Image (tube, rainbow, N blue to C red; front, side, top):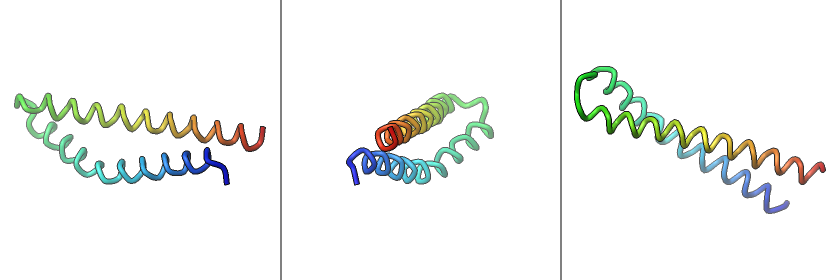
Length: 76
């Protein structure tokens, strides 16, 4: 098997494991923010949730790019 397939598979699996392990913590941060709308520490928690969403989106876009690139190399 070629290296690009291993890179793509590793990128997707490692990203999925990280996503699943961090999901519960992000859910608790969102619940805390919803319950305590007037506290000052919400801004730091909100920033971490926003960065988690951005990085998850970047991981998804990167994964799609790698899969399309692999299919292009394999079938093209």
